[in-house]
Length: 182
Image 1: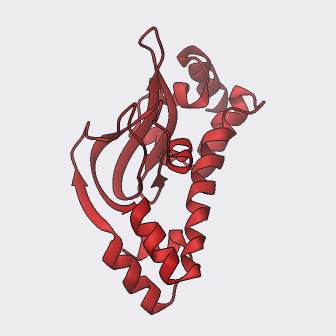
Image 2: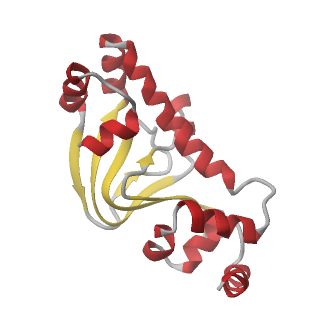
């Protein structure tokens, strides 16, 4: 639980106890959905152990990876969570995982008890910045280098087709980039 607290912000012992009372612990099996298309995102999750994919399916049935999450990552559909509108995406457990869940109701309750819980907003910032990095004007080599530098574990957890989709490049381009890097 200490990883959860450290990634969420800085809290007093009393605040940490309040947070622990609101957090729900889950053991999730592979392919479990944390959020389905059309549902409103009402929780944020912290992965204690495991892997999760955040994706959408286009009208042709192609899966487009939005985010890949691993141990010690926060998982949330930022847009649905903040606007309270139905999600256009899905969040699915990729491998058996252990995680903590904090509902929006619990977050509001905690903020009412202590303004320190406003720090939880950085969780939303973290997930948003991670997702939007690959939408920018970076070359395939720069995108791959970013993964190698910041989250090399993704390359061990997920297949190359998912990595390519996440980087917004084709699998063939990813293969060429990997050859250049090695």
